Length: 129
Image (cartoon, rainbow, N blue to C red; front, side, top):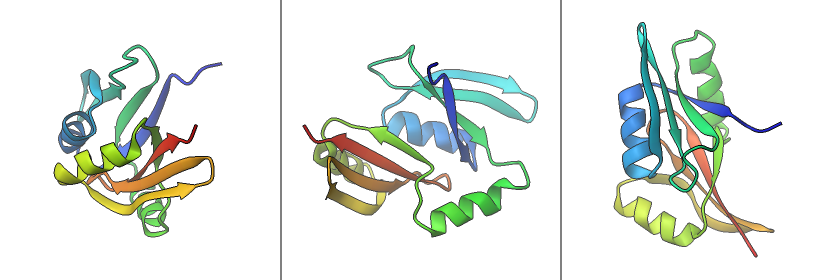
């Protein structure tokens, strides 16, 4: 069994594409109209045929309270691996990305948490070798 698609709920799909593609550096894979919303997925540049992240509209009535609770408790909605956390942190700060937790050593990983500007916290993780 492999992970095919996982998702994050976003308030605005166009803003999410801008953030996830132009700031984080993912590649837009699908942007298919589906009525009021779209099927929008992104993938990692290094593995464009790998797992996809669905930028899922936050339109279901249960989503706003769920997202707010996670955000207020500091719980990331997703976690992405990076290979140079300090470098990514500096690059993203220069691009205007807001971090709620800067790079910290956490045992076998170094991690940081950013605000995706779409209502979510996202964790970046570097494996310590």
